[in-house]
Image (cartoon, one colour):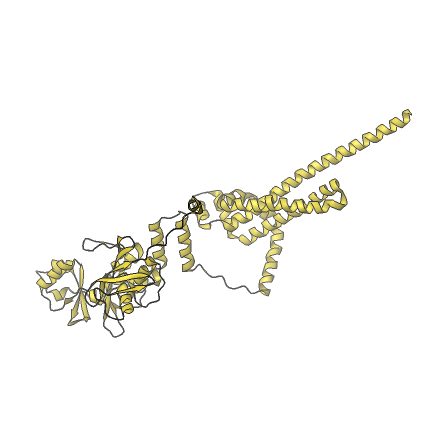
Length: 445
C-alpha cells in the first residue's frame, strides 16, 4: 500500500514539474510576442513617418544643427533602401509573432481550434496595435518620429545591407521589364496648391501667401496685361515749350513723360522730370530726351524686368502689330506684380478696383482686371477682354455710356460714369443671399 502511494506521489510531482515548465515557457513566449507586436508598430510608424514628413521643415532643422534631423534627412534621401529595410523588418516580426501565437493557442486549445483562433486574434492585434494606431500617430508627428527612429533604422540598414542589395538588383531588373513614365518636376499649379495649404494651416499669413503666388505666376504674365493703355498715356509733343512741359509735370505728378512726334504712335524719347528742371537754364528740352525702349505686347514681364535693369530704364513702350503705340509699362508696374499695389501721393487709392457701397452693392472701376473682377464675383465667364470696360463693351455690343445697364447671372450692372469712349465706373448689385432654413427643433416649438 505504501508503495502505491509512493508511486502516486512521484507521478503527481512529475506533472507539477511539467506544468510549471510549460507555464514558464508560455510566459516567455507571451513576452516575446508582445515585443514582436511592439516592433511591428515601430516599423509601421516609421514607414508612415518617413513617407509623410515635410522634407523642407526637416532640412531646415538639420541646417540649424539638429543631428537627429540631419540623420533622418540623410536617410530619407535614399528612400528605396530605407523602405526596403523597414519592410523586411516588419515582415520578419509579423511572421515571427504569428508563428509564436499559433504555438500558444495550439498548446492551450489543441490542434483543432488553436490555429483558427490564433489567426483571428493576431489579425485584430496586428491591425489595431501594429498598423492603424501607430500609423495614425506617426502621420500627425512625422518629423518628430522620424528623428526618434533614425538611429535604430540606420543600424538596421547596415545589418541588412546584403538583403537590400538583392532587392536593389531585383528592382533594376523590374525597371527593364516595365518602362516607367519619366518623373516630372513640381509644376506651378502644384506650388500654388502648396502655398494655399500653407496659408490654411497657418504657416504663412495672407500677405505672404499673396506674394508667393505673385512670384510663382510672375513668368506667365505678359507686358500687355499690366500696361497703361494708349488712351491713358500722358505724353508731350516734341515741340512743347518749357512752360507746357512744366505744367504737365506738375499736373500729372509723373517723374517721366514720353515725347512724341506729331502723334503718340511715333514716340521719339522719354523726358525725366529731374533732367528737365535741373537743366532748364542750360539746355533745350530736346537735348534732355532719353531714348525710349520698345517692346512687343507678348514679352513676359520677367524678361522685361531684366531688360529694364540692363538698359537702366524705368519705362518701355509697347508697340502693336502695326507699329503704333499700344501703351506703356513702367518698372513700378512690374514690381507691383510681385509686391502688390504701390501708392504714392499722386494716386487715388482704390482697393483692388472695388469699393463697397452697401449690402450687396459695389462700385467697380472700368480699368479693373477681368480676372480679378470675375474672381470677386465668383462667376465663370470666357472673354478676351483684359479690363472690365472691355467686357462691358462686349456685353452691350456698343460703346458704354452713362446709364447703360444689363444683367449677367442674376447680377445687375449699371454704368455710372463714362468718358473717352469707355466706362470709367459702374455699379454692381449682387442678388440677395438665399434665406437660411430654420432648425427643425425651432419649427416644432
